[in-house]
Length: 266
Length: 227
Image (tube, each protein chain N blue to C red):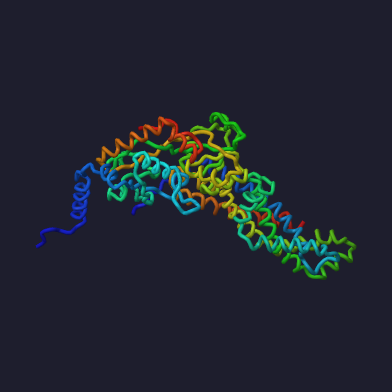
């Protein structure tokens, strides 16, 4: 005779209950007070996604996300403690209160909105066409007859296929490194890349004197925040709104991405 | 896990596949003709034990270095060197030209050693007979030594040509639109990688067998058959 059967279904039910409980336990809205009391803002950042977050020559994290973290810390008048995370541990870092904010190229989608809150967008993330500074490209029509390198199967490949003229010679390569190598060797005139990859390429190869040309697709980054911390969220949103107005967001985007932040969604 | 195969997803991209087959065949055909000629020329330089005149020593050294260098490095490295490396020295080649040159250079080196084996197997008496008939060195090589030499090594040479044709599959890495490139592109679009590579594998098999039959027939007919 068994009272509780340890079959898969029961275990799953138990887990589901635990998840629901964890999700519904009302957190006291204390994050902002705690930060102001301890004078420390804990920010989760990534160090593997240049130029948003990567490791500088002195082995310290640098990048747009890190600049953003320090900017918010400065505006709040507190010290910033960086918590290094990887892509998959960004949201858990919030749920376990290891970090107050996640500033790590975090995109907003409905699944994530169920477990965490988002502030306004702070930086653009995009796929775009990049090319040499001395060639003028105003629209996709100008790509007619030009060779464009792209990584096979990447989002850029599909987006470029939709907008480029038929006479554009699209050269597809196996991975981002091969695409960049082909561009660096002059085998293709332009490249379509994700912003972080392209930013990295331009930082490491200044001799290419390449620049942002045309936008393929936008998917901006948001700051992640624990569910229900509305006071902290309002505070951060105020700081972001101010930064947007003062041009600070544009300055940061230009510094790291080579283009203005543009019109970011709230 | 039950696998559901959807070959139509791949076969509906037949224009891509057709382009791929065309490029693979064109690259192979061109590199076979030029590569075999390179092989014959280099084999003449390297071969010992026939003909009155020999190539100058420096030329033997150059050809020897070429053969050793190519036969002891991977094809994809040679290809990348030509496509990504040479532009730094000012030689910018299209992906297709780079693929063609890489295949010629590669086949040439292997063909050199294969054909040399055939040349060196020529009985001395045959050359003496040719000379006694007042044939020049060049006439002796072209009409007396080369045809039986090619006949002896033809199966090995055909094998090597097949290998080069199949090896052209890496040319897709530098965006040459050959058959493997088509497969990669199709599977990156519809994620039907299993089907894409099955279809392309079958096409390669067909191409290889056909090429082999064709070359066996053509060799006997045009190169060393009875005239």
